[in-house]
Image 1 (tube, helix red, strand yellow):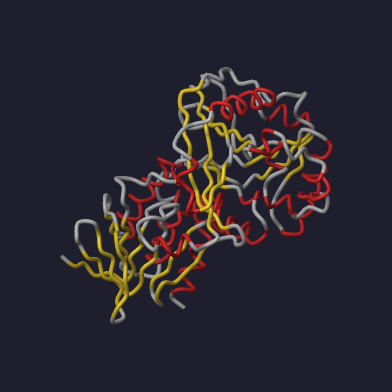
Image 2 (cartoon, rainbow, N blue to C red):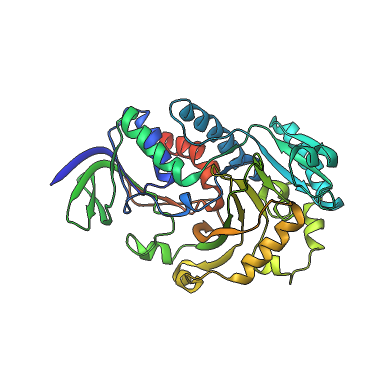
Length: 384
């Protein structure tokens, strides 16, 4: 059986899905091939925070475009989106200095942010400890989503309103291009034909083009996350990012004082060793998602990261979180890890094995925030 399309996208996560969406908007006939019954990778194992505020300028612009795209799509169906903004809570004078500097940068970039006093933060965020908080920087336009539910609803919308054809449980084992057509062959032996093919396989590096990936500067990051039991009538709105996030995110790297402040940090601390920063986000069931940590390995050694959860990391994150916000309960209902791929020297991995086959992966932790805007530009480029 052969099915013909204008574009085949391999990988149904957020990056592949947004490439499909922007192609559909050009009135192209698009097939999305997803190897699982629903996406299982980084797209569904993250916080569900759309936070351009954390990105460097290039990706902040992609993220701001993504905010518009999410809002447009959410107007057509409920994508679990809440527009409650993001806040960065500073815990000391150094972090306070960095949020003040970022606030100035935002003014120059024309991106809305509001400096909050300690009192304003404590009043706005129930349970926020006054002995932790020194002040905050609030981004009112930013969004929260429940990732696992959102991607399923987005797929349904694109099928029903835009004519996307999705093939779940479809593993592509080979792609090639000949005679000006691209061919994707599945494990069942089915062939899909199209004039162009895009591969957004996340951290799946063993099936298609393993040699390309093994020789690249891609690495994988393993992140541990936790979810508390529902918090009753307690409400914590928006994305809560804390002092360790201020010390980690790319946007703060553009602040004048950043390098000097980083040099004063203890290089041997537990949080440095495991790349930990503390984030909070309330899910739709009232529970709080907490995290996260980062352990890295090259593509060739990705399996060395293992499938187990390091309880020392989880305990450390819970203890740090308790110093920041007094939640009604820190009882944990769920623990998991996610894996994403990123480049060591570039911001995203792009490679063409042949003129009309495009591999795009290694977007790192920018996927939920940046994919909408980046994919639009990339589809324009591919179809220029």
